[in-house]
Image 1: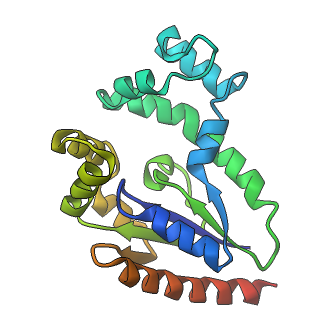
Image 2 (image 1 turned 90 degrees about the vertical axis):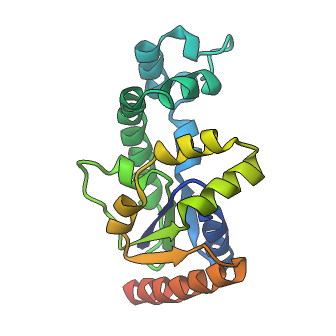
Length: 203
């Protein structure tokens, strides 16, 4: 297995890159999907969240009240760190279970928005880390135009994540997504050529 860690700040265009890699033949393990799995009713993750944040973060049916939890963690970095300390290890354990199912010559992409945040104190176990990068101004405009956020809301979301410098510091490959979609996809195709060749050599 050749394992790529794919990350990027909010509205950087990471989903575009992930979708292209899937088209080309990569197996995608989506950390956002796993993050929902590990806080489903009956999980240790949801129990730990409810214990720390209180019953107001649960809906009447016992599922997670995401807006209520979001309001807490986006307003308080310490609370966000606490949530991360509950969810990130559980997500990583599940991801590793899925990685273990891959064939020897398979390219697996771990699509993870918070790769840098989740890796604090843990070795980054990837063959290659790809960071999708776009300027803060570009991402602000995307959040406002595509998600209907105010400039203040968009800036708050950007500031709640790792800095561009922190992400770029761990990058083996940087995909510049400040230009056109076509320009970004050309870079993804080049990444795929490199990764698929490396994976074939492992079989």
